[in-house]
Image 1: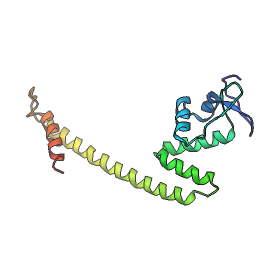
Image 2: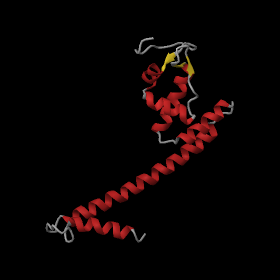
Image 3: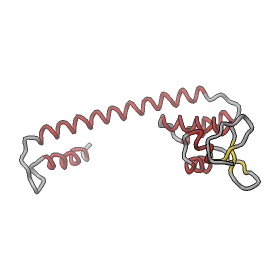
Image 4: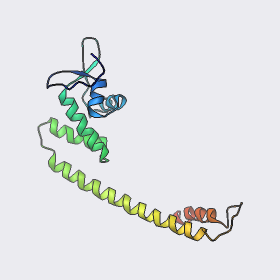
Length: 152
């Protein structure tokens, strides 16, 4: 079988490189997903090659999309187990998305705080002299940030 992209009908098999090309997921990542259990172990062709079908393509696209949204493999595994057991995972996915949004908002708030601290140090340090000892210059301001944050 060639390593070029071939679009398959349901039931037609493809090798791992083709699965990678169809989904945009690296071959090593596919193997990792198999080892971690979010992607079922591949079936094997008589020659020992891993083979996949359209069901694997769909599952891998879901995993890739969820990872791009920052969803953990553990959470993805739970969602897929529900689905595999015939239980619609929609309520769990809604809860997961709400939690993910809260986490992103907290990270944004932290990044905004860091941005303001960087601006404050840059502006304060602009008028300080150069200092090879790094105590009375902008570098000293940076050193004091870690001291200030260790008391929090």
